[in-house]
Length: 294
Ligand SMILES: Nc1nc2c(ncn2[C@@H]2O[C@H](COP(=O)(O)OP(=O)(O)OP(=O)(O)O)[C@@H](O)[C@H]2O)c(=O)[nH]1
Image (tube, rainbow, N blue to C red; front, side):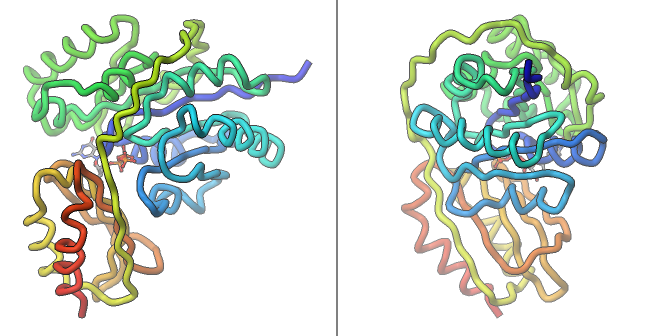
């Protein structure tokens, strides 16, 4: 009998720390891991962030792994198992994906894999700032075997307890693990052996978020870029990508007004902006960025 490859789904809202967790896993776990990811946005930034590690990445393209993409997903799982023969397969969904259809499909239609568990990464800071849990985030929390309560450095102990109570009220079965930059004991994330069966999903598609991208081969003036970032309107919830300054290329990450830059080996500036009705600001944002080109 063929042994089924254990599969972990990593899900969670935009910018909650899924890629950060993946980077931690890849630095720490000695197993041969294959990663399947799909991204929301026109360019695949996350795949580039974790490229080059001992992993095989299959990018499933934009949108969410949901009803319309399940055929492609099943084909990608078969292909990655045939070509890499991983000891463990990880699927990272986009922040806007509802994972219930995916979990159902893994349990029902994928004979080569066994769903080990669903890990939902939650941004503790964001849950304090925006306490009302949206439809997609709720489904992500409900699907979890483990909730990784990330970014605990940004909130107080008291706030953490409130957030944990809220998460428990949505999913009382999942264990909640607190983490800073995805650093948790990884033995707790793998080998869950999920037994809970996912009921068929009832999808209500709510394309809440839009995205657009910007590429340039020009060098960007850093003070001008920083001023631009600080002027972004609150509906720009997430932005990410690479920026070339005069001293090299940086990975840029922006989530709900907080942002950082990290030196990163890449070729050129490419940025994705994500938010509600963000396309209405596309021309204005690109014009501001062009002013920073030098
Ligand atoms: N302060 C703080 N920042 C964190 C922590 N974990 C991640 N971040 C930052 O949060 C931002 C988003 O992290 P990612 O790992 O890219 O988030 P993601 O969930 O993969 O984002 P999407 O794929 O766009 O949904 C980055 O700037 C990270 O450096 C944490 O524990 N504390």
